[in-house]
Length: 120
Image (cartoon, rainbow, N blue to C red; front, side, top):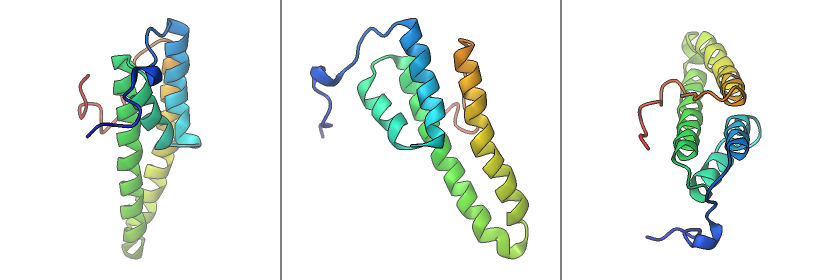
């Protein structure tokens, strides 16, 4: 099965350090405006392995957090879901902010829960 953007025209090669930092910040910040779309597009278009790893981690983190928040909503009936919803909701907000700060400092950041799911 061939993806629609596998043609060399769509690939972005040889990104500079500034562009790499900008892409990392974009992937982390996408949690607030397009948590699934931006990491997926970055994964398909960018050839830098570190950015690919980061985009997969961001995508998996959003999927895991979405599932945990859904589970928390189901468990509200038993009252355990309320604290779980608060914790997971805060994590969904705080973890990408930490990633943005680390990216701006030039450090590598791995998302919790999903850091070992994808090895580039």
